[in-house]
Structures are given as structure tokens and as C-alpha cells.
Length: 476
Image (tube, rainbow, N blue to C red; front, side, top):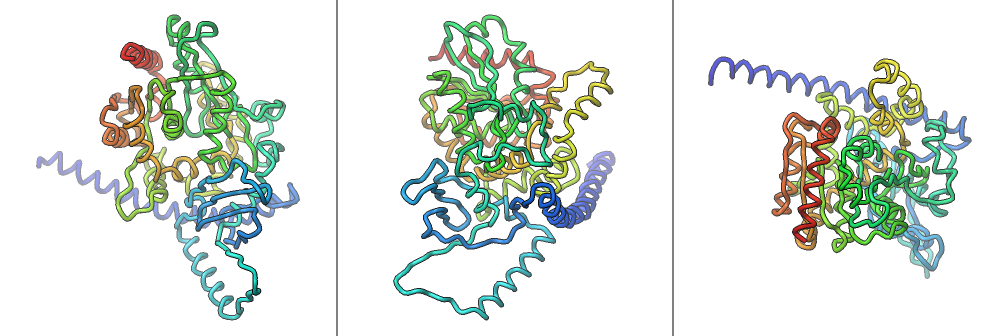
């Protein structure tokens, strides 16, 4: 090893150690801050809204299953009923345990204290059993129970924005509509539609990620043949942001079907998805394998779970590693680990997004479009928090099964595109997908990251998509 390589290796090692040390202190402070903010928000919520909403810092409580209201199995919600006779569409929804199980210094101290109090309570209180009745109880996080009870009644059960959420016309345009459906931007062919394409954006983004980049760069021939759909996912952009929603996989898929497949009579389609959207794309492909013409995934978050690890927890640690560097990983860690710190960030950024848009335009002298800022800001904390945990973390144990079904049942071509410099979702994720779906083609783009895989190379990306769709049409 040369002297230059030794020096470089030494600096790299020193940088890692420094990152570890600084991260330990920063996240310890954030652990304490999140704990304090929990009580601060409870007080403010009660003053402003005359009630405090449940949070995942809440202690667990017992839910009686014989009541016919909520059936649970350990930490998973199995069925929610609106009457004693039938289950509504929320049955079999899975709530990610990462919502209420995130290890930290404060949580471990709090947990040990609560366990000791429960032990003392059980020792001093004898169980009372009534003869002739059988009532089984399960321990469930109280916030899940309260939020599920509030869900009966549909998306519009609570359309009034919370005090910490934005109340502008753009963010709440869905409340003026009589339809409970997603915002869908439709472009391309209007008559003689030959094929359909559904674009699904990633986390804290919107349909503008596609409509402001690749859509204007498609050729006239493409737009005369293909009908292009770009959706704002539930909770993001101009789509509904129901306060009581848990933003589960089932809800997201149902809304895409209800907003695109059914009203536009889509019988077959291509899918293009980015980041978190790749998970929804895979689930959609598994649900409708015969309808999928091709599947294009950009930066899919797939980390195979090592033996002995809990899939949800492992995924959370990979995408949110509790490190201050790189910056995008620090941001992901704030969003994933801290319910109340992330709510504060949403309060400062999302509620005041009009101010940030104005400052962006002022600083840049209106020379750049603000669609990325718009997409980043136009969501609620409830939507971002639950989508992050229930979709990215909560489906971690299902992705392998999805990929196996794509390999065995999907006839269309699978293409995976990844930026070489992506610091949030590493390139290895795309190769992990290929290891499960051998016929998938992986394209690693040099000098591009999680965002610039599309933004800044939209013309080249538009040509790539056209080639994928045309080749798929010819092969079929």
C-alpha cells in the first residue's frame, strides 16, 4: 500500500469515527427533545383543538376482542368492524411495529419503568374472571386503537386540517370535491388510446416530479399513442389528506385503483415508479399481473433481511441509520425515528410552504421552477409519518414475495434504473432486485443521485422510457 493510500485510508477511518461520535451525541439530544415535545404538543393540541390526538409514545392498552370492534393479533391489526356482523375494507391491514417500537435511550428507560409498574400492579391485583364468559385480550398501542376507531366513516371523517398543518387552498383542494379520489394529472393520447402508463412518485413528493420533467420531453408520437397518468399519492400534493388515515398499503392501492384504473377503464398499463413508489408499483403488479405491460423501477428500496433480524426494524435502520452524515441520511433519520421532531419540521416547513416558495423564487430571481419545493412541502405530518412506516418499513418482509411473483407471473419487461451516487438508497438495492428477478435489466447511471436520476436528465430519461415501452410492444 502506497503512502497516499495509507493517508487516504486513515482520513476515511477518522471521518467514520467522527461521524459515529457526533451522531451519538446529536441523536441522544434528539431522543430527549422528542420526549419533551410529546408533552408540549399534548398541551398545545388541547388548548387549540380541545383534545389531544393519540401519539405513538402512548402506553399500550388492552383491547377486548369480544366486543366485535377491533380484532388484533399481537402487534398486528387483523380486522376493524363497523358493526358486529361484517368487516369493512380495513380488514387484514398491517400496521408496522416501527411506529411504536423505536429503540432509544429515553424509550428504553421509559419502557423499563413501565414494565416495573405493570409488574407491581399485577402482583397487587388478582384477576377477576366471570364464569360463563370468555373474553380474550391483546396488548395494542393505544394510538392505533384510537385512530382505527376514528377511521369508521370514510376518508372525510375529519377534513378540518390540524392547527399544525397547512390550511391553504392547494393543500386542501380535495375537501371541496364530492369525490374521495386522488389528484390525477392526465396527459398524452385522448382519442385512439393504444396503451396506458401510470407514474408513481416517491416519498414527500408529488405528480409534478413527473409532469414537470419527463412529460414535456416525450415525443409527439408517444403522446399520440400513450395515455399518461401521474398521481399524487394519498396524503401528498393535491390528493386527500384524511386526518384519521393510517396510510397503509391497502389504502394506497385502493385509492390508485379507485382514481385511475376504474374511472378511466384501464385494462392494461406500464408502470414507472420512483423510490417509495416502487413498493406500491410491485404490490400493484402482484395484484394485477395480467394487466402489467412493463415495470420500470427507479431506486427501489429493497434490502434483503438477514436471518434472525426483524424485517421492519432492519429496513428502518438501513434507510434511517441515525447518522448526521450524509445529510440525506440525517434527514431520513429525523423523519423516521422522531414523531414529534418530524412534526415540528412539518410545522415549520409545510405549514409555511408559501413563504419558502416565495423565498426560493426571490433568491433565484424566479429562474428555476419550484416544483421540487412544492412536492416536498405539500403534505401533512400524519401522512408522511404513517406512509414512511407502513409502506417502506412495514412491507419490508413482503418485498421478497412480491419479487418472486413478479419473476414468475409478470410477462412484461422489468427495468431497474439507479443513480451511482445515490446516498439514500444505495445501488446494491437494484442489484438485490435483479438477484430475485434475474431477467430484470439494471441500468446504473454515473454521477447521478436519488433525485438527479430524473431531474436534470429528463430528456434522456424520456428516451429511455420510450425505448422500453416500444420494445415491449414489439416483443408482444
